[in-house]
Image (tube, rainbow, N blue to C red; front, side, top):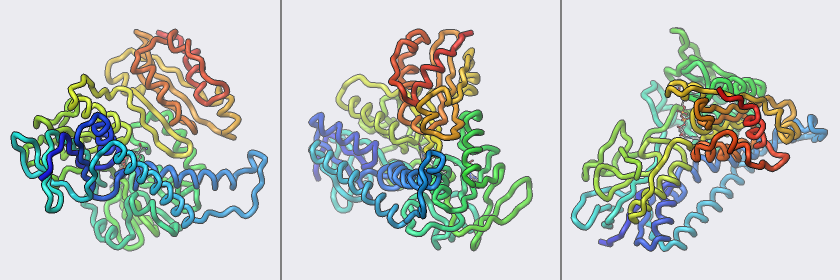
Length: 458
Ligand code: NAI
């Protein structure tokens, strides 16, 4: 039995950052990880997807170089080499996490942590035969793919006909035809890679639009762009079964078969809270997610939950910040989690980035709204780098106060500068104050300066 100041279950972005911060603050810290440090984000999510997409963009640049005066002959994509590079990138970053934890004097144990009880000393966590006691416990176990009871799906997953992002990110041979169930983030990012590298991709989405809650003005243009690249869509269509060589779809009460060589299941993720022993200490859950307050505290004293497992925002960068809030709270430092200006990015080509409220959300919340919508062609850099690009930028203002409520940008590189709008929102700057900032020229982010110049107020 070993005692710790903090035990962290889960070594993904929420868990490893919490461990690093706790270790740096001289707390005796243990991080328990069942699979690989880095979690879903580093091993089978954000990073591998972006690595693959970079290969796809490089390939697409070579294929369509003519628009930029570059003619390349005999361009081809080597899927196996793409996967090799992805594995190299993942290895580098995972070992970086290990090194950072070591430098922060964090103990790491490989195995599945199960909470067995709680006493005056703290919470007991069992890993294999070993018992550990933590004065504090941070649960950071992430999320798992949702697997609805679609007939034939389990068999298809077992046989390898249907895949989750985990397997699709490691396929060494691209399928000729890929059916994607779900036109949300995972579905579209994976669809983008495979479509750009030559697979015929069809996305089946239950709603009448792709990209979930994103602003419809931008989503329409994104949809057009993806279709132009050859992607096909069945909207308002539900996958009701999976059988040999096809998914069975239902639209307006009629069913039809969509033939495919592989099927991607991307219909959402759920908090990974099962089998952790949370019930042994009475941690409150809501729809499987751990209930937390603004300091990441659960209902059990000394027990915190950060990242996907609390179901608030299933995004790695939210987990990072929540991890800091949890550790600061343990250290007795005042810190509060704010969710109003968390950026979110759909890494399709082009990227769709957003922060704060959309126009519709702002109106629903009762704001008097003023909107500036600008084509990305206002940015010289965008025009120089995006032949035929038709992206837009939308800023949503609180018309009464002249402050920014939200920003949405459909343009490559928008993921790199959406944070600027996030800062404006967080600081509640007024339009005249925002206009005083000097943007580097020429950059794509100058679109914010131009959009601010267009603001007319009420
Ligand atoms: P999602 O919730 O974004 O999209 C799932 C889609 O599947 C929805 O549009 C839903 O209407 C549709 N759907 C559900 N059942 C269906 C059926 N039977 N037939 C057809 N369509 C159906 O979930 P997704 O894409 O799996 O992503 C999960 C989570 O992972 C996200 O919520 C996000 O937090 C995280 N993520 C974030 C990324 C990013 O920030 N760039 C990238 C990848 C994942």
